[in-house]
Image (cartoon, rainbow, N blue to C red; front, side, top):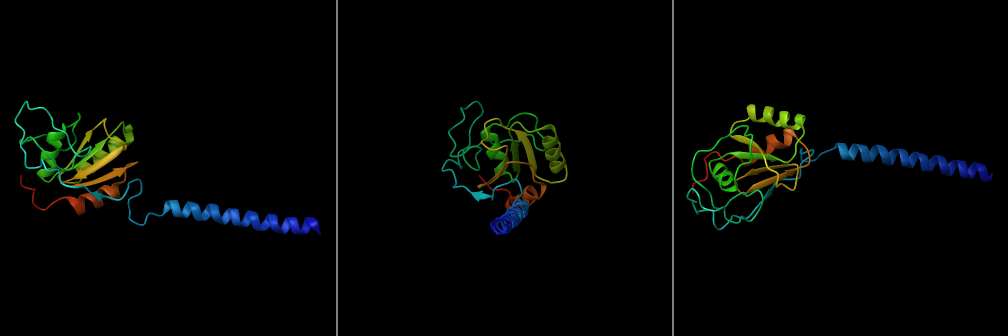
Length: 172
């Protein structure tokens, strides 16, 4: 009798464990906002120095966030698309002001960099560049908006671009 009761409890415990593992697997596979690998995009406050234009050779000012989503910027025309070297923060802000979305990565694998290149080639007004100072592996920015990603997610990046790329560039 003791063996039968113990066996019944063990059977129920194993069944509960099995369903918990399956449910956990399904929950981690689900993504209610369609951003597997990425956090939800969030708005950042405007930097009070956003109307400040920096002359060539002037030292880079402090920014409220890294990477910045607004702030002092250096007017000009800068490389877009896939950029091989880091973009200085004043130029990042200029690109954001001009309507670009920046996708910056830190120590990305060869396959992630290839995914990012493919994404840029099929999406207008998106620039990809390395940035060793990031806290997340991938950070996506638009004017006043940011999204941190642990891994590349085509759908999350596409949704971010669609939601946060202005129809008209921000003037400044």
